[in-house]
Image 1 (cartoon, rainbow, N blue to C red):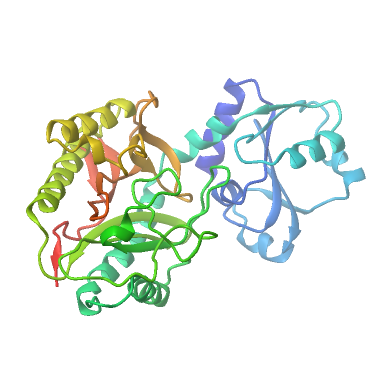
Image 2 (cartoon, helix red, strand yellow; image 1 turned 45 degrees about the horizontal axis):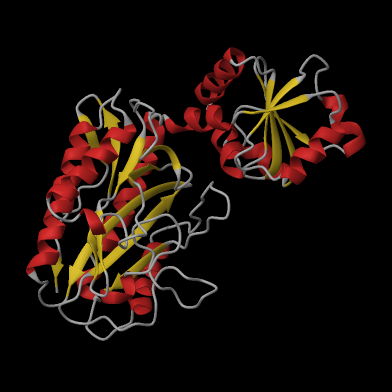
Length: 382
């Protein structure tokens, strides 16, 4: 934990920022070890201070590298902040304007600057301890995926299948929270979609499902699962806050040749990206590599979404949030760094027929992506 704080302090110093004021729960947990209702004052030099609203008793036990204090009144807050710390960093990507206005009022004379990328880049490099936690999440999720053939049946609804997954995951300690940082994004713990019900869009992802209503247009629907149609199961596994992302394909009967070929192409794209996932590789170029393979195979029109509604990425960082850095996406020109963790998900959507693809989570290493789960990629025939 101290290493994480030190890395952020070095970045703040290099940027000429005197202190960070962190308000997002995932950021506070990452730098302190507690996710209580609080605000973290993290100076470029010296001991961080965690101002806690509730529960201060729990925060005192859990917080690993900050001084814990009760959250002061608005009139008293400024007295707790060193007078020389004038240039203050906030994560403008996620903090509401109302919070910015509030702290500007109780800390007059300070300049607030955006440190969103500094914080996100710091968090994107996973320590061996974090990678160990991600492996635990992967093991839990893989164990439940392995049970799907035992309860997948023709005629059951997508919701029935998703509920079976959710039940088994919760029994194994799945925490349920799929945190996302992007504005206006919300996501359920996973989805099971089949046939034409899979060919719906919602957020910026290849497959989102129809959902149960227009108020919740994502995930499993009440559509029955039919024989000889692709069944795509995409779930997050979460233990100790750390998220792993995985997709597997199932079928009751047989898939037609075109869908099976598309699945083979998705495996080829995944392997090409995995081999390219070395430090220094440019993220955008891995997306372009993926798109070029899909185009060469005659599947570019349905790569990563419905024709005309396609997402321009093939992988996304994961950790305490599902949408961490880096992103293997069009326009994201940043190089990969050792220790970053990326979910790679090449998928194809065939209107009215279903979605097909694969997803696994990898750690960036000098030898390419190191996979965090040993679960087979093969389509499971029931």
